[in-house]
Image 1 (cartoon, rainbow, N blue to C red):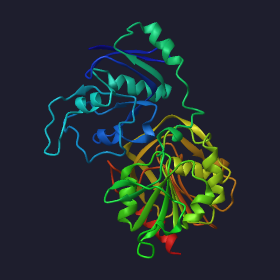
Image 2: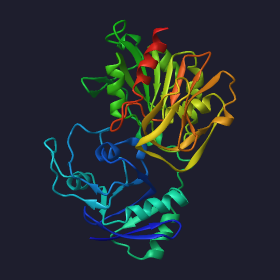
Image 3: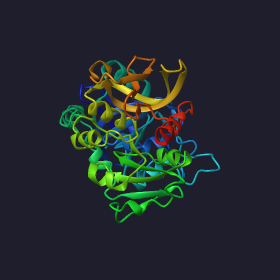
Image 4: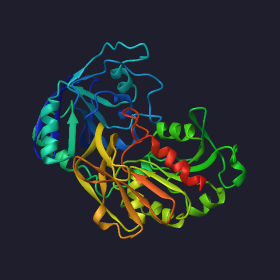
Length: 374
């Protein structure tokens, strides 16, 4: 089905929908991974974004019930060069096209993804509108420019859980109360961890569980008194979408919980940076893929990491003298991690759970456990 993609700067890309008629909009970004499209589709950090894959052939291994990072598709549209409608994989339970259609998400192919990626690399991520119904370029460009900017948007409140849940047997189990400190079933045998959900990925919870943690996930707006009443051994701050600066309620909560062992990933890293006096800014086109090189300044080791973020902490604004930079991105020298010399706090911008992706940085979950043992 004939489709038109329009960017806010006036650039037009013809393409075709493989999921039927529809319209979609949001910030358009690219991911450099060769695999992992189902994990990308269900990653809450992509809320409000249309994702294009730089790898040209997508859909060849289908989809299944295991390779998900949340309970739904989170992207607003999925853009590829060539869609493979006949998957070949023993784990495949359905086609990518059927998966998208079932959740009313547009899938687009026959798009010049190389040209689009080069354009975004040079001009930066931007708002875009795609339609099978409105094929007037001027109209679509106008509609793209009317989409709210990602800057200033608190999208964590859109993807966070509405109720607390306990992570067990590889799945969430809804809880009716989290005020009683007796909620922990394995205290003393496992580390009791409260995880703030700003858009948490399931594989982070799997990794925390594998590291010996008993995890209760709470809504992003949960206050510090509620968390203190739970008497956790540690606090985890998750990944998530949007601009970190409007998430002021969580920044204040983090400050109130300083002293408890804390580990932040992605948006959690940014919120910790803000809580300790830093500033964040929007990257030109973000870091999204499974092949981002990061240097660990403590060991000198180079780690290949999985990443998905459009904002970063400005290292020059970190005012706390006790903060130590631990990781930098080797592509652009942006901040990728820090720790606190006084408090048991560590944070990384990348994704050490790496699903999909390399396992170079999975040791960070062990570092978090070490903080809780002190």
